[in-house]
Image (cartoon, rainbow, N blue to C red; front, side, top):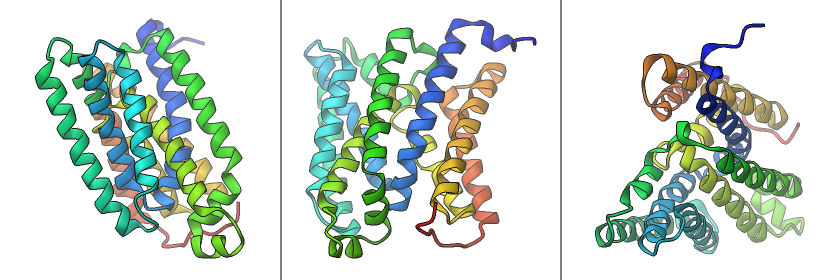
Length: 273
């Protein structure tokens, strides 16, 4: 069997491996992001990482460390900012505004290593190396293990939080744990897809899947397939068309979303799986 031309290069192999791992992990987390109506929070966490990366560059530390610290800290603040979506949206917006302001300040104070922080905004999938893939793999496994551990209460709390509280489920704790998982997922996805385009992995496939199926089990499987399809397709288009990979992946994600809006069945998500 002939190996495609683009897979003969190490940078393409690394890119495919990294996007495959992130597509699986990110889409599963993203399914619950959409189900819980936390898309704005997901986008905010990705962008907040910019301030962390810039701050780490300012003190001479690894940008990824700063990104992770800021994102997890912001996730905790979001978890404690309110019980409902309307309360949290205002708090999330203020946290995002403050973090972006800090990022701009850090870049202004120390521009020598600014390219490393600015690259966080758009990703660099073709610059991923073996050490980063190890970091991505380990963190993704931790996130997926955490998601499996809280899956049943998370599903119940996402669909009907009031009933979940009445059953004795610690909804606030589940919310906090999920936001921490989302923060960790965002931190490792950002260097690949970029902070500004993280919706392509976390939101696009899940939104399309939920429009086409109201069953959680089917929806999760479909979300993963759509995420892999858009990720792999984006890399191939990028290679042959000489276009930014993140832009290609984002374009395919938007296409899936638009198609799902036109062909949705209008079913509501159920607890079956």
